[in-house]
Structure formats: structure tokens, C-alpha cells
Image 1: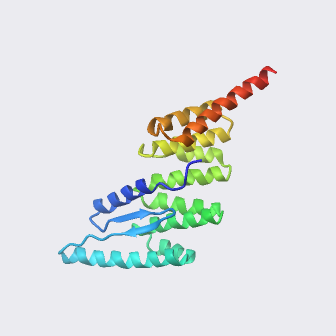
Image 2: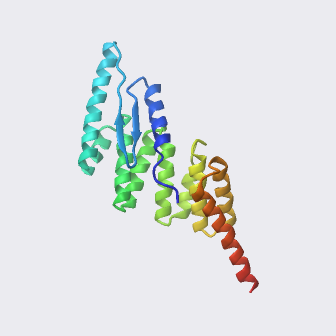
Image 3: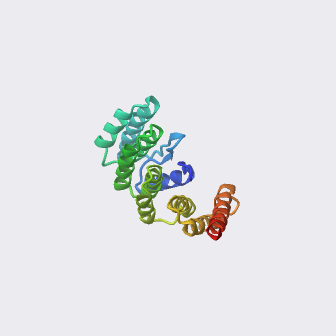
Length: 211
């Protein structure tokens, strides 16, 4: 199953969001590494005021993360739902929920992130599909994967699709998905192992049917 971290893609997506909106650039390694913060200052007084507000949001969010304060983060999401910070906090809450094996809350927080920020929505969708698969909700996982709007994460999506189809007993579909993923990552040993294992399993199944 694919890892829950996609830091490089998250960093680029979040950076682009803040560039497009003329505000501070947020670089985030949301899963595992937490958040990295950056500010870009301007002489214009109105922009400086926005930067000061941004710094205040950063400080609040960072303190909740450092303290492991899930209640504080949840309140932050509710209060700052009209800012770019709330979806990031929702992603962190989802990660904490997964660590606690609280998958229902993880799904809720990921759906919040999807609805509030199109920039990171596909990252959240991949994670949501992964959570569905953890809960053995295979049809739901496939539906989420099919709803992705970008092709930027094709390798992760196809690997997770392969994992899901394999769990459904669709060997041919899983093998095809892994092959597509391997076109993006030809030297990935995990993908190769998964695909080869399917080929072996299919051989065993055919042999068993012959007997």
C-alpha cells in the first residue's frame, strides 16, 4: 500500500497557492514532518498588515501542532474556515486521527480539507482513498480515486488503485494499475514486487483450477 506521505507534492501545491494569492508562502511537510513556515515581506503597508496576520495564524497553528492539541486544532479549523490555514490544520487532524486509528474522524477532516482548498484537494483525496481502504471500504476508495482532478499524482493514484483492486480480487485490474504506476517509477522495487506477486498468484490460481 502506498505511503501516507507525499511531501514534495504538498510543498509545491501549497507554495503555488500562496504565490497565486499574493500572500505568504507556506511550505508544508504535513505528514510526519509537520509544517515549515516562510514569509515574504513587502513595503506596501497593506501587505505588511496581511503578513502580520499571517504570522499570527502561523503561531497559533504551530502551537497546536507542537502541543498535540487536537481540540485546539479543531477549533482553529472552525474559526478560520475562510483562510488557507484551516485546510492545512484539517490535514494535520486527519493524520493524528489515522495515528489513533480513528478513521471516521480522519475521513471527516480530509473531506473538510477537500471542500475548503482546491489546491490541496487531490492530496487529501489520495489520503481519503487510503483511509477507505484501511477500513475495507473498497468501492468508496475507488470512487475517491476516480474523482481526482489532476494527473500530477498518477503514480501514487495507480499504486493505490492497484492495492484496492487487489483487495477486491481483481488481479488483472491490479496488475494493469501497477504497470501504469511503474511507467512513472520504473525502478521502484515495491511496485515491481507487487506486480510480480500478482503474476505468481494468477499462475497459482490457474494451476489450482486445472487440478
